Image (tube, rainbow, N blue to C red; front, side, top):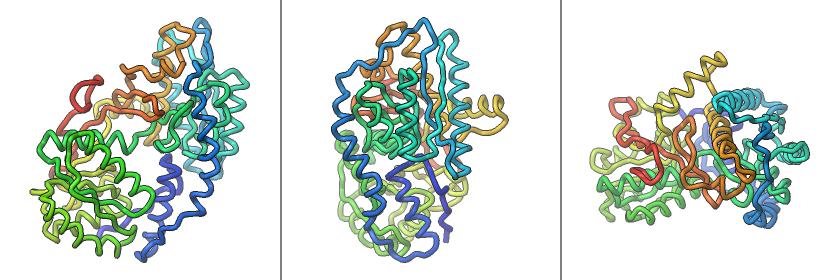
Length: 419
């Protein structure tokens, strides 16, 4: 049986995903059922979430700070430097390097990049954001973790300064806070639309009964409604080996009774995905007949590609050509590979630089940031939405003979295929 891999202690997928990572660590130690209660963990972010409701929401009509485009525009970069976690230092370095690489590519557009360490903590992120605004920052790029981003945005909401955070936690987005990380909603929309066009629109959603899984289920169900697909049913399972095993009969029944032609899984490679894709075919849900679709990346780690159950599966990835180009350029410039989310810092600077190049004093206003044409990033095109989330041009990939094959390329403009 496939061994569940232990994820890093921290990742940018917080606070929602860090809770899931804790569960995965517990799952690796034993396959006992995990209690659903996470009151203590959620309480840590609840205070910030409540505080965010009114202050962030009141910034929607503010134009943002006026900038002088004839001089270098001060931009603050908040990175998790100064924490006790060595991986945070690697991440901080990668984000700063990527941002400086982007600045070098801007040509005549001048940016005064000012880097602030947050120590990976909400209180420090709040203070760093306040200091950045006091120092004249016209916009803030970062921080990484969800609760840090929320704290930073709340702190500077009254100033009208926008925060472009590296988190993908869309639950905190809105007002002056934009998330740059890939979101469940964006991925679910891309895959649901593609599945509907391929005649795979009758879908059963299989999700874990935890914060992450329920958020994924909601994203998929909403995307199906938008794409014209049909939700045949949703089947939840406890985040445990036993929970997955017990859910298989219900999954089979739901697929057969609803004449489903696709199963959409929220599970990832560090959790239940290997076990689900092993047991479902054994129970009679053939991936050759019923399309397996993944909300998460199925190519990370690469060993996942060897699993028999994932062969033929669909999932979404950033534009692979653009991603490879950035990775090679970063490697050449800094002698090491970029962090998995390092490109988000490049994207942020690219967007800011493109807006500044217009020469308008209101170039960094909310209206400008959410322009429909979007921006070109290192992972493809993207744009910021009015609700603070983002939309990215994703490719649809399939695993064939243990290789990742793009079956529907990432769009190069908004409004084309894939949108």
